[in-house]
Length: 267
Image (cartoon, rainbow, N blue to C red; front, side, top):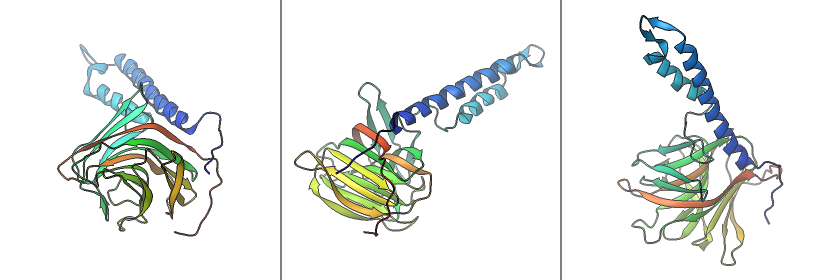
């Protein structure tokens, strides 16, 4: 049975607020710098604000806001193509609070990955991510996959752990224990689940999916050691080096579990 303890303002709301505050701060700093620059004259008839250096201040101010991504994708601080892949995208629908992620890549497997990843960096050992995942049926690649993932870095061969649903309906807990190591997995007994969840309890990761009864059921665990911060987010892999796949994620929840991190024997 899964439980969570309220923290007043949820971690997901804090992520949204922090992204908004960083962008607003960046815009405020850039405005101040431009006004300051406008009062200086670099040459007769030319204001400093009109120079290329003033435009540089604007860019630097936005970066100083604390994120290299000015336009945050919902709660996510970044959206990246990892590995050798066609260009992917992350689109956030503010009205429905859903995410449509398009990703390419030959696979998210082996010793290196190729996919599109919407991510946020987090610290701490008691996070979870849960979402309803709608993989379009009848895709050309049965192993096209959508994932909810914890990842050490944005390197293609990074250590990671995820819960994945494939276009043919099968569900797995996948992991790479160390950078450059080979990916392994455990297959869930349920298929075509509506909702997926992966939860961190210290270095123990627990994968869950909805069963035929509509309830969430844990189906696998794995111990993977990470160093803070980690990248937490959603990914899509087309399982086709020349193709793209699009998956909709809705009812996204990212929060602290409130559980004390626990050590467990490696499964």
